[in-house]
Image (cartoon, rainbow, N blue to C red; front, top):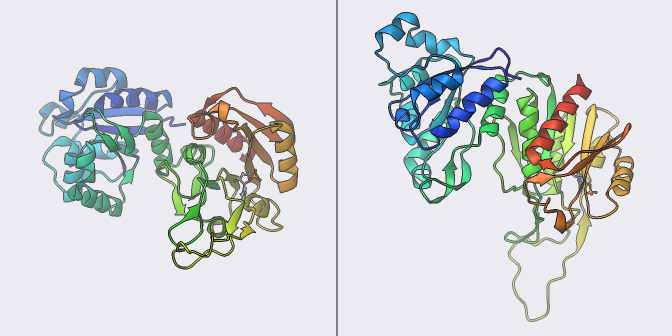
Amino acid sequence: MLAGKRILLIIGGGIAAFKSLDLIRRLRDQGATVTPVLTKAAEEFVTPLSASALAAEKVYRDLFDLTDEAEMGHIELSRAADLVVVAPATADLMGKMAGGLANDLASTLLMATDKKVLIAPAMNVRMFLHPATQRNIATLKDDGILFVGPDEGAMACGEFGPGRMAEVPEIVAAVGAALGDGPLKGKHIIVTSGPTHEPIDPVRYIANRSSGAQGTALARALSALGAQVTFVTGPADVPPPAGVRVEQVQTAQQMLAAVQAALPADAAVFAAAVADWRVANAADSKMKKTKTGLPKLEFAENPDILATISQMKQDRPGLVVGFAAETDDVLANATAKRARKGCDWIVANDVSPETGIMGGAENAVTLISDTGADSWPRMGKDQVANRLAQLMAEALS
Ligand code: C5P
């Protein structure tokens, strides 16, 4: 996927630097060449020898190294790569980038490069939430710097929250997306994801337990294969992937409008758990408790986005993929659903509580198409996404 690509990997000084060693391996597994650059602080966490051994390349560390400058000057180093990746991007490095400082090799390369820069921030949650960091993030985004993560979770410092560096597969996918290369290059794919929130009044809503994990993984996998992805998402638990166009919506009606606005597309995948009904008599102001009895909610049917797009007469995407979450008779119900909605493929899964699939990290799916049903072994949602993205790439080629 990254065959022949050259990546300049700047490793900042944070505890997450240990993951960057694995990142070197994973990028090389995909065919990329990785040239590591270590900041002084990074050397407190990983050794130049480990980085060099894993990359099978020389490691650069010093701005004023006479030998390095004679062999390959820092300007040339900043330009020779196809992409510059900073992982971990510490608060300090991001501050330097946002402020335009260039007082060591890493910050000088970042100022001198004419290539895209992708950064994976990693820091303590308080440091991440600090107004200075948030200001720097906004500045860097305005400058066109690409971000992957940070994730939310338990941190080495014992605290919990946003600031943990994105996991290695996520960074590898973001690298693929940033390079925009792969079998889906030039293809536009729409992905819906997450739940929808249907208002009862301005403060209350009807929702469901979808986390958005499978849709997010799919958008990431398609983007990693080079697709230009429009990611239409309801209010999900997981952050949207890097490198895709994100359209945030709340309701099913808004989701349909966003999908229609994103057309034309070569393919569309409907992974969202769309609410079947909305409250027809939603109130404009907060409903009050009354002595005269309980409020009566009336429901109206929401548009079926998958069916609407599958049955379009003009501009129908060439490949339309739906999901079918079932609790019993999975195969029969999903096969009937595929015919009823008019989509090309249905990804069916059993979401009975005992499977732990809804909201969990794994999925066991059956892919139903006009050639029959293919049951996949239980695997991570990321792996399901990668396999489906690969099959879509084959179908669209
Ligand atoms: O009918 P059911 O909700 O089981 O169908 C699931 C499939 O249809 C999923 O792909 C889901 O994203 C899509 N869907 C939709 N709009 C709806 C309901 C479901 O796109 N209103």
